[in-house]
Image (cartoon, rainbow, N blue to C red; front, side, top):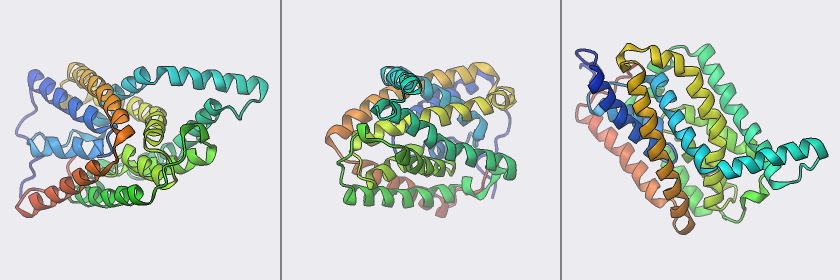
Length: 293
């Protein structure tokens, strides 16, 4: 069966900008909600007949989400930077903001190492089975069940002031799993933090901050290749995607932090179950599950 990802011809500039706008909105809505941006950036364009935009394009428009995080948490980041500077001068490493900075640094190491390993030993990762529609569906369902478990057993007592290097490593290992589409970086980190007894808003806040170095590095690494890709129409569509991703990401961050003050994550559990099962039903009905690049 011919894959829906195969298109007859490369889109023109206007069409490329429209696609980038849609994908930027999808990126912004899904990067910080625990539902997997990489999965939606694969599934949505395939369902629309556009084909998989590829790892490079999706990594770069994530930079729009990074700008949103920087804008939203600029005060927190300045406080962390100052605390790290004071700790380096005076040895005040017990300061909560300094410990947060250390946890962010340690938590970034696993995903960087995993990303380098994929680049080195899995050069065809874009076409791997892990990026197939069936894999995304199954992973989404599994992660929904794990998030449900975290909601049921998590004690939700720990605040961000209690963060430690151990937390950075533990949540960082969970973040590395998000290199598999369907896992969700925010979903995996939120799940592990809840299982470890974090309060929901604190877990989400740390997830956002922890994602800053990893997503930035991934976007910068892929920037040159993505800009050179003729299928994406050059830099203008990329700019459209970045802007839309940044604006929608900022709104999603603000909404999620407010939402988690009063509600659990069950709505995301339900969505991920429906998302995964919907893909499986679509595949069974004849949709193409082939991996596309």
